[in-house]
Image 1 (cartoon, rainbow, N blue to C red):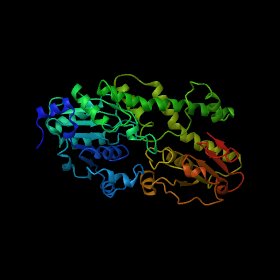
Image 2 (image 1 turned 135 degrees about the vertical axis):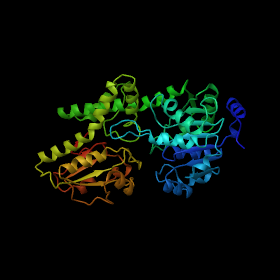
Image 3 (image 1 turned 180 degrees about the vertical axis):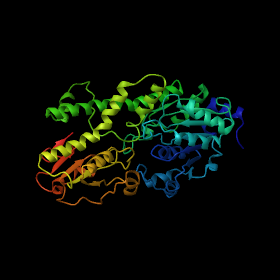
Image 4 (image 1 turned 30 degrees about the vertical axis):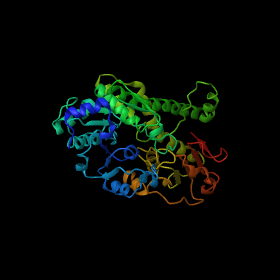
Length: 436
C-alpha cells in the first residue's frame, strides 16, 4: 500500500531510509553505477527505454566497460526493466538521462522532459524526484516540475518533492568512481534537502555537500565544466600562437608548470558529454536573461575549431613534403572522446575525419576501445580491425589509449617522409613529426 501524504512528510523529516524504494530512470554511464550502488541496500528498479541495453544488464554485462560483470552479483535488490509500470511501487525517482545539445548548439531537453512524463505517471503523494542530469540553473523547477504536475495531477512541494544532485561520473576513471567523489545534494524544501542528503550519504563514502538550493546545485555543476572548458581553450589558443612561432607548446607548459600556482591544463580536442556541452546550457540561460557570455562562448569557439586546425596542419605539412594530398592514406588512432574508454559521444575526431575526407584523402580509423557498430551508426565511419604496416602517408594520434603507448608507429609509415602528428605526447619525440 502506498504511503499517505502525512506518512511521507514524516519520512522526510525523520530520514527513515528503510521504507523507500528507488527507481533509476536512464541506465547509461551515470545511471547504472548509481542503480547498482543503491541496489546493494535498497529495493531498486533500473529503468531504460533501450531494450538491448536492459537485456545486457539482465545478463550482468555492461557494454560501457565501466562495471565489471561480477559487480552485478553483489546487487541482490535490483531489477532492470523497460516496463514503466515497474516504477509504480517506487517512492524515490532519480533521473539520469542525457541532456545533449541540438545542431544549433541549443539545449535539447527532450530526454529529460520525456523522463519526467514517465516518472509523473508513477508519482504518488509523498514521493521524491531527484534529477542528476546536467541542466542550466532553474531547469528542474521551471521545466521539469510543471511536467510532473501536469501528468501526475499532484502539487509540487505539497504532494511531491524534488531534489537535484549533479552527476560527477568520469568515464574510464577507475580511481575516482561514484562512491569516492564528493556529492552535491539539494532539495525543494528543508526536509527534502535533508532527506536527499541522507540518502546519498548512505552510499557515497567521500561524503556529501548540501547546497542551499536546487538552483545553486544546478549552477555548481554547470560552472564545473565551463571552467575546464575555458581553461582548455586558453591553452589551445596558446598552441595556435606557439605553432606560428615554431615553439613546442608542451615544452612551454612544462616550463611554466615549475611555478607553484600554475594550472596544468593541456591542449587538445574537447569532446564528450560534459565539457563540450555544458557551457552551452549556461550560455543559453544567460542569454535568456539578456546577458551575452563572452568568455564562455569565445572559449567554446576556440575548442570547436581545434579539429579543423589539426586537419589543416597535417595537410599543410604533408604538402610541404611534396605529397599529392588527394589519394594520400591517413590513419587516425582513436575516436573515443577520451583515453581508455569506449564513449564516443560528441567525439571531435569525427570532425578531423570529415575534414581530411574533404581533401580527397583515404582515411582509416583504428580504436580498440570503440564499438564499431556504434561508430558506424553515429558517424558513418567504419573502424578497421588492425592498421596495416607500411601504407600511411600521415598518422594522427588523437586519443591516448594505453594500447597506443606500445604501438610501433614507425612500422605503419609508408616512407620516411610520412607525417606523424602526436596530439597527446604519447610517442617519443624522435618519432613524432608534429605535436600539438
